[in-house]
Amino acid sequence: MSFKVLIANRGEIALRAIRACKELGISTVSVYSEGDKDLKHLRFSDETVCIGPTSPLESYLNIPSILSAAELTQVDAIYPGYGFLAEDPDFAEMCQKSGFKFIGPDAKTIRKMGDKITAKTLAEKAGIQTVPGYKDEIPEDPEKFKAVARDVGYPIMIKATAGGGGRGMRVVEKEEDLITLAQITMQEAKNAFGNETIYLEKFIANPRHVEVQVVGDGKGKAIHLGTRDCSMQRRHQKIIEEAPALNLNEVALEKIFSACIKLCESINYEGAGTLEFLYENDNFYFIEMNTRIQVEHPVTEMITGFDIVKAQMRIALGMKFEIDQSRINFKGHALECRINAEDPETFQPSPGTITKMHTPGGFGVRYDSHIYGGYIVPPYYDSLLAKIITQANSRESAIKRMLSALDEFFIEGIKTNHSLHQKLLRDEVFINNKHTINYLENEFLKKHES
Image 1 (cartoon, helix red, strand yellow):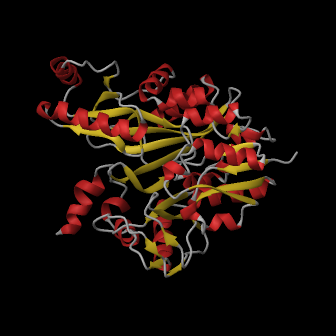
Image 2 (cartoon, rainbow, N blue to C red; image 1 turned 180 degrees about the vertical axis):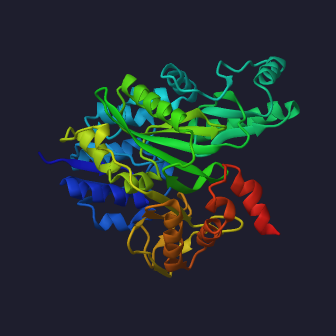
């Protein structure tokens, strides 16, 4: 049976989806904004449809326009990728009501796991430890609110229940800042997610960020694809990711794997998902679940040989697919460097025309990107340009291979964070795997300012 899928995204993840579809014999329809008419993946898609002006609100976030394109081209399913509408339960629901299969979990599951408080409750039922905090409705009375915060204990983290991508969270060190920072967080959450509800967590001071990749068949069976370490971050945005996460408590890890699978099976989870944890002093603290493909999925694919995007397609479309934990074999270590269009020191975005570039290659090197010489990087979307991934038998070898790949890689015409990656990969703390989520901002950048 032949299928046709509409890819409701742009950039490297759209190209990644087209490649998976081609291997599966699936026809593709790519939507694009007026400002994206020269994107690379449009050349490789079977059909293309312009869905609106350059602004994301009028194109990639415009649900009626996307559904109209789906109806016009008579697709079977819609692939959301990451970002934009990927975790919007209303979009998933409207896809289904319009007769299109949403490639991912159903709207009910997205709502459950997208709400941080509900997700934590379900995680606890599956036997997963969560960060201590206050999950009930925040009191409107300022003095009662302060009392709740004191019970949690400073420093605390204010979080939006619908937050994500580093937005909708603030650390409060002292009580006099509580009300102001809560109001700022609520306003940010309302603007970004349309939901101003917040909750409080104990601030875990210096953890690592460890996540578990899962895949469910939507029929009560799930598997895990191991861990990733995403501790190299700036303002809650990941810079370097790797798989597997090393130096973890093995007993605790096996319990986490079992609990993650139990959680997914209990909600009949369908497709790819990621459970994210803070890891400190041999303890895993669940923070959230992302009900979509992750930017960093290639490192997991490199150490398992498991194509996560093809699995998403197969499961959603009812194609032949066997989900079996015993078939998952782990090999070696993989790293991913996110190359962004930004100044490597100030981190200011750097849109413009790429005048010249060269991509890396060689044994154990993977390059996922939509850019090319002459491509104009727009200022309207995420600054991610490319992902360079290396895999080797050991972490040490994967780092050396990445340094070699970075030496081959260059982009001219705009600024990128290429040089930052080169410095990070030569940093002794990173080489010795001693970094936490605070290292880049609190130590590394300050060290390189002097």
